[in-house]
Each structure stands twice: as structure tokens, then as C-alpha cells.
Image 1 (cartoon, rainbow, N blue to C red):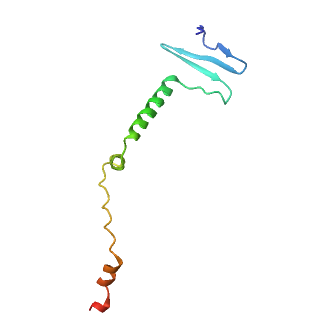
Image 2: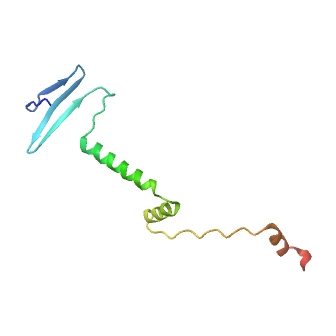
Image 3: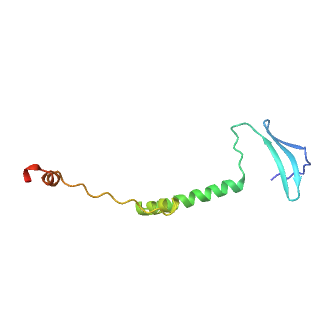
Amino acid sequence: MLVLTRKVGERILIGDDIVITVLDSRGDGVRIGIDAPRGVKIQREEVVRAVTEANVEAAQAAAGVTPDDAEARLRAALGGAAPAASPSAPSSPSSASSASSPADD
């Protein structure tokens, strides 16, 4: 690891197309600016770590999720709304037609 000391306004060049500029220094923090080509990925380590951990947790949780679990999570996310009444089983065509048939009168 290369360790450098820089003052506010000073720059570090990486290759031909990446420039790191020290913008500000406050107490225990340093503000830097990074100029790099659009294709260069620049990420903060703690964000990458948090996203990776969240993805692992989500994958593990999804591996054990049943439809009932998913429904319970959805209800919880919606504020504990009661589940909708399940539709009654459709009546068979013969029973429906015999119940309303005028010939039965």
C-alpha cells in the first residue's frame, strides 16, 4: 500500500485518467474528490459490505420462504391488514341450474 500525505487542494494522479483531489480536512475526516472515467467503478467499502450482507441475508431468507410466510410478510408490511376472505368454491353447473330452474316450481 502506498501511503501519501497531501494538503487541501493537492492531487494524486492514478494512471492517465484518474485524479484524486483533497478538498477539505476536518477533525477526523478528509473530504476528497475523484475524477475518473464513467466506466470506472468507485464505491465506498462500507456501502459495498452492507449491500453484500443484505443480499446474503435476503437470499438465505428467500430460500426458506413458503407462500404462507410471504403472505404474512406482506400483511406485516401493509400494517397487519387482515387477509381477504377466501372466495367460496364455485357451485357446480348442475346445482346452480337446478336451483334456479323454473321447471322445479
